[in-house]
Length: 240
Image (cartoon, rainbow, N blue to C red):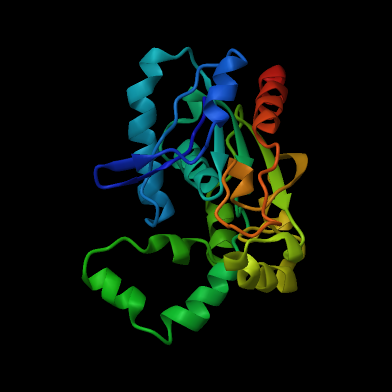
């Protein structure tokens, strides 16, 4: 089962381009979730739980969750705090900021305090909890309050690329994170992405790790990421 995607109002879109098809071709049933893109972890986790309860009758249990980026934190919250551990055999996270991101720290320190953007958004009723939930301080608290659940296996994969191979829009974020934590994929460091059984690093940026390309720079080329998902799932399925 593939956990990932976003939802904004009635609009939904899958994050995992062509990856779900490859997993299905390998013989695994796939269901892609969708959660709010900028809400905090708890709200997104509750959305994920509602989605899971809706699709569980179609599946044998327990299931394997594959989550990218913040989705891994949503899944961990759901498993630990929302009574879903009995439905989950394993969680595999890809480039998830388990220990937060220096970029979120920078954003809170240099944007939200100097500009009224977040305050205005909150007054308008817009969801902006993601930034605050992804700071290194908040994720340290999250980890203390969200222990792994016995009986659920946890796996992780990181991603990283040299700054010279990053898309132009991610050069600044890569620099901020590299200065604080070293190798990263433009949003999440290798160090922050490690959780549970670490299955290695993919040579990809944050967007290539879901088989997407958001730059026209010649250096930002697609990488062969699809089969890595299949291999990851086969490894996890073999363990559980």
